[in-house]
Length: 267
Length: 277
Image (tube, rainbow over all chains, first blue to last red; front, top):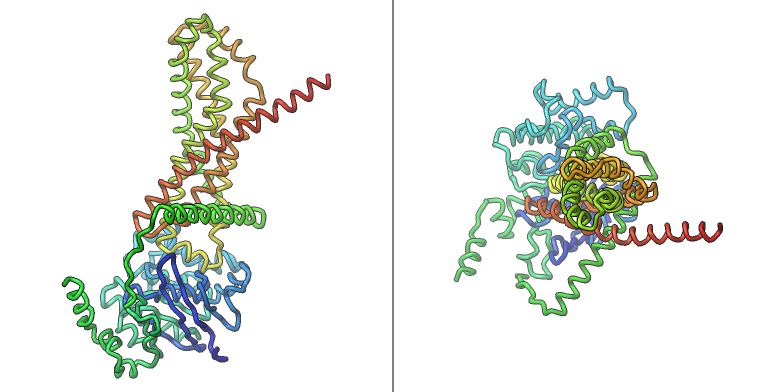
């Protein structure tokens, strides 16, 4: 384990029923770094993110956050550690039954004893930080566009001043302009708050805009048993110059290998 | 490439896999129930989570429980009248209808309506929250899903099902009386006098005690199925169906064992009391 790392995954494997999703992942994320985790759909990126915050327990191996092994923590202590994280979910995961205001205020109401005036002030500040137009606070999530939902989700995740931000596919399903807005918000968050960030994405624009370091996962079903699942770990420049054809294909968005496999199966 | 095809299982393997799945589910449900009771004792639910559940379970269920209760009483009167009348026991019909409704049909009917109307809705709502990651979001914001989602729903089911049972009992008794006295012309004085002696407080209490257990079962099963839903629309639909089917089976099984237990308890107490004097 790296002594300076904030989050460490130590030989982490995850199996759901008959399906192995992650296998012996070793990863150390230093404080203040923005790490992008890339890879094809279904390679276990989101599972890895949920393991980092203790929403899932690894089948084998351990996840260490700030020196504490998450599986060893009691419920109360795990909740305390989780509050040091902010999580922007892929579909924003806003509470359907609550308004935009109540969604952003949820964590503050649960964790801090604030007067309604203080609460309203904090919520409005967070919503203006993510650029939500005024007059949206009383709307329900179903009345918002995809981009607005993501922004409210980001405001909610930031409401408790987290030390670590986890982003799950922050730009998936958004138009290029809204994707750029979200990328800019990720950058702004890093500049205005001293956070460590993990961004799970398959959008290379996002990777190029926000990442200090890139890790690429590969689906286990396409690997030989002895091959490591992390097929790339380095900077953006190193990723662009990578010799591994699997990394090159991903970076260039080429599907030659996959198409060849499909044709072979058809034959 | 590690691409193994699906393994074909023989009958013994399938039976073993079925048994393992069954025991795993039972174990998981037991842990879930114990943890929920633990949360219930550890921290009271906030009024903002409890009140909507009380409204959904209680107020919104009243019309359906009243209508079904009334028609069951009416149907019983229609079915039993000719048999009783042939034996010259028409005026005794009320006692039979009322005891059946108060002891058995009222609680079972209220519970079945609750399982169908509220249990399915709760399972579908929690399943949707599960698949859209709202349950994970709750955990990330420091709220425990069992405390925030399950405890209020379980309390609402447990506290309000006795009241719904009383409604079903009342409407069933009135429905039976209406048909007997107004359609079949049984003298209402004799109908009520004969009914009175047959139903005592123990009969009513027996129905209400059973109802409380039914409420606990419906609340726990529906929430468990919802929170363990498989992904996608199919998963949500299946969770909702499983919640109703499992709750319904649980109601009938509990009804049998509780009826045995409560009748034996009654015999034991009354027997002991009569032996003493």
